[in-house]
Image 1 (tube, rainbow, N blue to C red):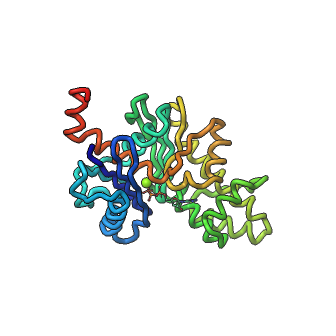
Image 2 (spheres, rainbow, N blue to C red):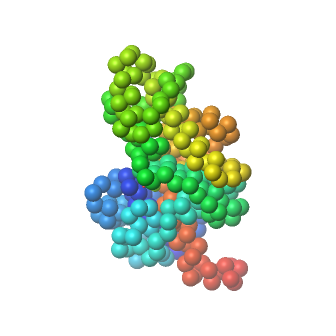
Image 3 (cartoon, rainbow, N blue to C red):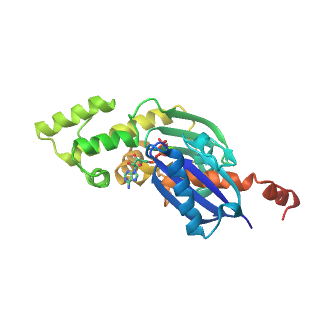
Length: 268
Ligand SMILES: Nc1ncnc2c1ncn2[C@@H]1O[C@H](COP(=O)(O)OP(=O)(O)OP(=O)(O)O)[C@@H](O)[C@H]1O
Ligand SMILES: [Mg+2]
């Protein structure tokens, strides 16, 4: 059986997944930086080496993410919306809503029982409600992002944050620190503010079935807590949420390859 690859060139991080059948052979992740093609090449080579494969042995490569159109070694490009939906549905087949929070945008996607996209809402106009927003706030508070996430996950109270604009929220945080507010209560307030914004997006779609949270921000336990509390329902969190888009791309590469389609027709 041939292996297939999915490459997600995100605005912040590039992810590669190599799949054979339903088994993930390897994956890799690195910052996209100022050279998305170079980052994709290095990430791809790393994943190939981990899987013990040569590029020529792959049955196909699907690229997704904001840099997908620039990847010379991809056989096809698919939008992130479709790939996140496909990846989340593969991991949690009862998923009907996907929340993807990445470095630079946030999306809520509604899917059908087969993992096909029905509708979506996306915020890609500003950093509000994305990983970048949290990174700016962590910098203002002189904390690592992981430390901020863990304080948010354990805080007992939230300081209400009124600004959602990244620049205004940063000034608000600096004023709160100056006034003597507790740092854990500020960060919990920030996480709740993002969750409220995501909830506002989600309300524009039919929220049925299970909700799966993907993207790098799903690794943030504070964000998981805020979304769980505000949505009031359980959330599926993949073991590696940041590679779900690349996983979906790899699944699409394998399910649309001519040999797989022929096998499906012959029921082998
Ligand atoms: N352990 C972690 N805790 C908290 N946040 C994390 C963690 N790991 C990654 N992140 C956040 O995840 C974000 C990157 O996620 P992801 O790789 O899904 O984004 P992307 O696909 O590059 O962006 P986009 O989809 O917006 O183009 C960053 O903002 C980063 O701070
Ligand atoms: Mg992304």
